[in-house]
Length: 180
Picture 1: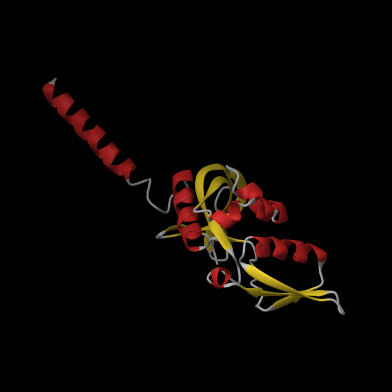
Picture 2 (picture 1 turned 30 degrees about the horizontal axis):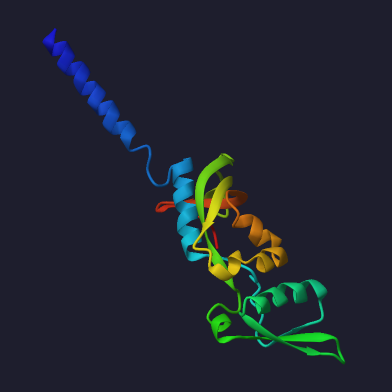
């Protein structure tokens, strides 16, 4: 009987060791997706102006003027108006110069994976599309101002608590990554 128990115990140990390796960094698991997304977002903050205009910047667009005037209110930009051509010209303030041209307002921290597609080979790598929940951390004071939130509703929604978004992840031997 004792010999049987030793054999059974040995088999349990072998199975435990063999299956323990199944949860590597390259496995398609929500935890691995969260790690990959958080590594990406630590290096890629969310910004008000992702297209990075060059300053000085001139515009006649009413929506863009509203947004940039909000940044004037929080003292990141200065504005002068060219009345003859109905254009506003924006330059950075000393404070705004450190943040220009994109005016980043924090980075995402992924808290959960709501769903993902089965990994399929695309572009030579296994890829999956994930839907994830996140919140934004390290939001500066100027981005918390109501005038900036009113001018940039997408930013206001993102910084108000948990948000949801989608991403594509590619599987590599070092883990899941957002393809750049």
